[in-house]
Length: 422
Ligand code: AMP
Ligand code: MG
Image (tube, rainbow, N blue to C red; front, side, top):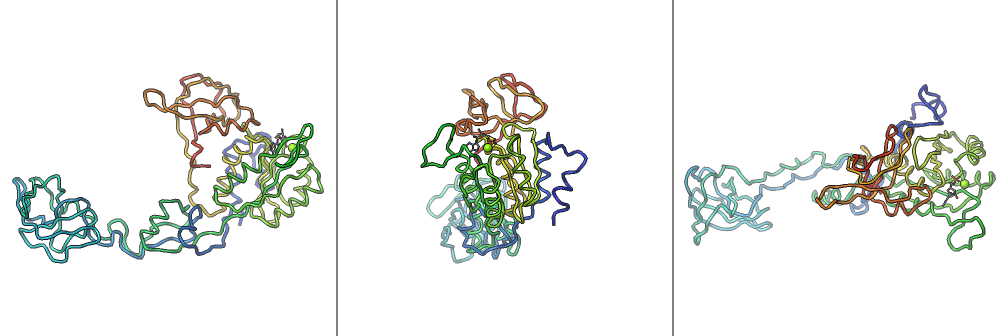
C-alpha cells in the first residue's frame, strides 16, 4: 500500500511544485509504485523483455561434470615433475560430448579438448602449447601446477541454488543462462498495459490534410516506440481536442483499460487549469514545474487505479521526461528490481554549451572518438524543445546539473547513452 495519498505527500515541507528538482520528482513518484502482481508461465523465448516473477533455481550443477578449461592433455598432477620435463603415455582422447570411458593410471595421459570430461584418475590438464607429442609419448614442460585447468562440477552454480533472482529483467544473456540450465519455462510478471493520447486542437493524425496552424501529431509515435521497446502493451487512443467533455471521456476510458495513462500536451500554463480541474474530479493528481529543460511542466497522479503521467506537448520534452521519469516508473511497475540503471559518465565536451543555472538540462549530444581515440561529446546543434531531429541525431543526453552554467570547450560533462535506455 502507498504510504500516504499523493495530496498528503505533496504537502511535505521541502516540496515546491513550482520548481521541483528532477531527483525529487523521481523520488516522489517512486513511493506510489506497486508492481503488478499477476504472473504468467511462458516459454523462455517469450520472457525476453519481461521481468522474472520467481527466482530461477538451477535443477542441475553447472557445469554438470568435471571438464577441461583448455585444449591439451589430462593426467595425474602427482605425475608431473616440478623442475624437469615429464613424458607420459597417451592412452586415448576425451572430446566435448565424447568422453574417454576409462580411468587414467600413473604414467598415462589423455588427449582432451575444452569442455571434455576429465577422466577418472586425472585431476590436472596441461595446455597443448606446453606439450610436445611424439607419437603416443607426450612430453610436458616443467612448472605445471596439480589441479590446473580443471573446471569442477557445480563450480559456477550448485544444483538448487538461485541462478536468477525474481525482479530480473530478462535480456539475451538471461535467456541463454536459463536455457543452459535446461529450463524451458519461467514465471514472469504480466506486461503493463499503457494507454496514451495526445491533446491539442492543433493536432492532426497522419492521413489528414493540415489546415492553417495545424501540425501532425508525432508524440504518439515516439511514445509508441518507447513503450513498445520497454515491453508494454500499448493502447493508442489518438488525438483528443482541448475540450473538457472529450478529455473526461478519454481519461475515463484510458484509466478503465490500462495500468498507466500517459498524455502529452495540456499541462503548460494556460492549458493546465481545466485539465487540473478535470483530473481532480477523476482522481488525485499533482502538477509540477520540474526544474529541467526540456520538459518543464509535468503532472503525476492516479486516475482510478491507473497511474497517470501528464507529459508536456513539445516532442523533445516528451522524450526527455519519459526517459527521466516514466521509464524508471514503468520498470518498477513491471516488477523490475533493481531497475536496470541508465548509466551516466563524464566525458570531455568539444564545444561551447549555453546553459542557465537553476535547472537540469538534457541537451542532445553525439558521443564520438577523437583522432587519438579518446571519447568526446558535442551537442547535436539547435536545442529547441520542438526539434525532434535533435533527438534523432543524438546518441546521448548531455546532462548539465542545476548548478552548472555555460560550458566552455574542453570541460568534462556528464552524459547518458541513449542506446540501452531506449
Ligand atoms: P502544449 O504543452 O500542449 O502547450 O504544447 C506545447 C507545444 O508542443 C505546442 O507547440 C504544441 O503544438 C506541440 N505539441 C503538443 N502535442 C504535440 C504532439 N502530439 N505532436 C507534436 N507536437 C505537439
Ligand atoms: Mg496543447
